[in-house]
Length: 365
Image (cartoon, rainbow, N blue to C red):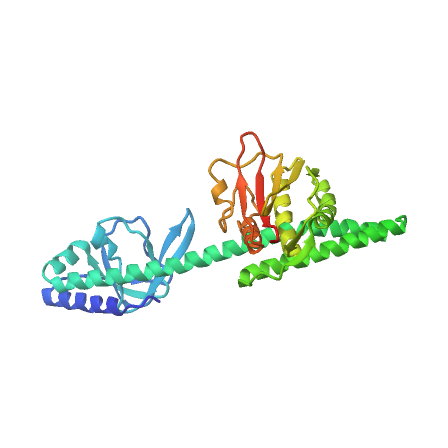
């Protein structure tokens, strides 16, 4: 029920003016669920509620009715007809047997002409209702957007989890096969263990971002060994999608301060993004450029590349383009991880080329 303190004041003042000026108005009895007026009907006057409850609602789209508010005894409704001389902007329906007093538009104008206080009271009431309505819609819009985002977020998580789960399923089949050699079973067990760790770290990263947690400690890691293990983890997964992963040059012999599991998330996200835009298969190339103070990693795919004008938006939280399962958080999380390592990440456009992402990691002093 809308706060009707001002509405009651206006209703009481309007009744007083009707009595003082001897204006003859007509009553109307409405049955429960009876439509008093419909959206789009001519705005012909104001209704005062003597008893009962009236719901005001509006159409959202072509057929969905959305309740705006409810009014009870002493309240009034239909004032928009007096203020803007336009058709009814909403519908009114009696929720129970209701007794109304109807004051025609011309009668209200005559009453207000003789009573400036009535005009001021109507404007105050209208202003209050508009604020209440705006607040109501803002709350509903936020809730709707929150639910929509949760749905997109859940779809994205499920989409990302499918990749390691597929590898686990393949590994389980291989390990359980009666014809599998002991070496094959050991490889399958290793892959299952790797993918379980990957799932755990993916979920931990999502929790870390949602809770605003700080960067975990960086540990010295051999870069070449790290890349060899990473390629081993993702090659089979990409091969299922007919995507070839190629290291265009040898990873340099470096020891870098890394959080390995978080950096895994960056590579997995870039590789999966690339494969999503190459549904018929393709090629992902990785290059390493060692500079004086940093290592630059370039990930390039053979897909269609970026749409014009979106490169600067790709790392903006919740920005998506062309991915039905995307939440717009993947690249934002990648940016967060790279910056926590002290590096930078960006996308680059080259005419006639696929998508290109680059990021840097600082070399130890």
